Amino acid sequence: MNRDALVWCLVAVAAIAVAAVVALVARNRALEAKKEHTEAELRHQLLAADSHLHASRAELQRFRNEQDATLREAKEAAEENTKSVLKGAASLLQSLAAEQTTLLDGIQRKYGGHAVLSDLLDVNHANAQMARKAQGIAVMCGAPLGRRNRPASVYDVVRSAQGQIRNFHRVAIMQQTGLALKASAVAPVALAVAELLDNAASFSQHDAPIEVTFQRVQNNLCIVIDDAGVSMNDEDRQRATALLSGEIAPRLSQLGTQPKFGFPVIGLIARQHGFKVDVTGVSRYGGVRAVVLLPEELWTMEEIPPVQEAPVSNIRRASENRPHSAPHSAPHSAPQSAPPSAPSRTMHGLPKRGARQAPIASVPDPEPRPDTTWAAPRSPEETGRASGRSLGAFQRGTLSGRNLDATSFEGPEDA
Amino acid sequence: MPEGPGQDEELELTSPLVPLFVITNGRALPPDHEYEHTTLVTATGAENGQVAARTLSPEAGQVMDLVADGFLSVAEVAGHTHLPLGVVRILLAQLEEDSLILARTPIPRAERVDRELVSAVLEGLKNRFGA
Image (cartoon, rainbow over all chains, first blue to last red):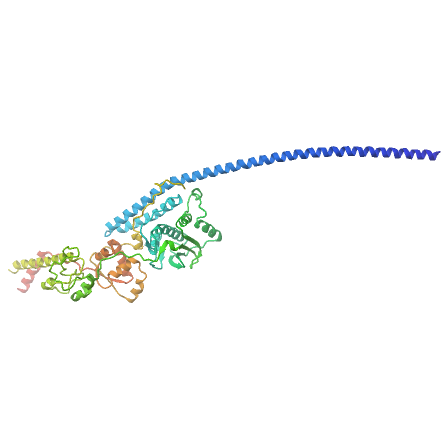
């Protein structure tokens, strides 16, 4: 009996347990389904939010770009405006400086014999430095450089550059060369070399030498500038190389309150005129070696012909070898057989001047010569014959005047 | 940079390329009484001079050529080189310092003697020696 009751109890418990399990499973299923549903919903919302975020971000980026572009445009416009304003002013300054240089040169030649000359030379030096600055600013603003119409020897171009820096006497040009720069290259190379010399002078001791040499490397002509200053570190070198190649053109507004436009200016003109400048070398004094590399389009082997001078050798020799002055004058003289008194004619039919009766006496005669010497016919030789003759006449006149005076004085005294 | 065509007219530089103060290398003028117009200069022709002459500037070389075999006055040197007189004087001073040239100052002008003084002296001499 008891046993039956126990079995039934067990059966009832098992049934309850099964029912409980079934109920739990069902509930679990329901919960899971609900969870999945919620998750899906959340995921959907997340996606929507994400896409919204993307759109917002894109819009923000667009606005940012627009703003940047506007800023850049504004900056460029400001730069262009500054440039065009400055360009006008710098061009004017440049032309004034050039005009003043020409004027000063005229004044120097006019008052060449006066003591004021040394002051004029100083003024011209100051003016040359100002002209360089004006040229530099003009180049930075995109204005054209002044141009020269005649080719010049590279030696003279460097001397011209030398004159544009403050301590120009520190610059020693070690060689003379007949190689000439073409006219179009004269002004830009002079400015570039001037900026390099100025750089060399400002980064070395105030009395250290700056040496300039010339080298021909294959088809290039190199102007080498050695200074004894401090050398540059790697960062400086990289920056200088970038500036000198003309790749980076710094804005005017980036130049700062104490603008250094040496290298940017060199970079710009080197790029415009097709030459290269390098400052990465080390000079033999441990300073910087700057090299201006001119390709063969910019220079020629032709020497600049010197200004033709009237030959003066005859005048000099006549004073030394008066008795035989004729042989020296042979290349310039008319045929010796022609009588000097006969008025011969030039090839254009104009009457020739008569032969000089005496050479210009640079050295006083050792003894007064009799009048016959003066009258003796001489070969028609010197170019300044007329002046020589008038000098001779003057001399004779004063001589005879003095003689007359002497007799007239002695007369009453003796009496 | 876009430019109007008129604005880009290139400036023509007409001044001499090498300024005079570079030719003189910044030296000061010699004193007034040195290298007057009529002072005569000539090359010394010294051996060391010829060595030094190779490193001369073209202008100094031109002066050396002019005075190479004879005396020439300072004024003539200036005339032939087309350089201002003062510049030539500076160049000559430099050349003489390098003992490349000799300068010969002109014979100074005789001073005008007071005639009364001379006749007084003559009078005195006559009285003394009874001429």
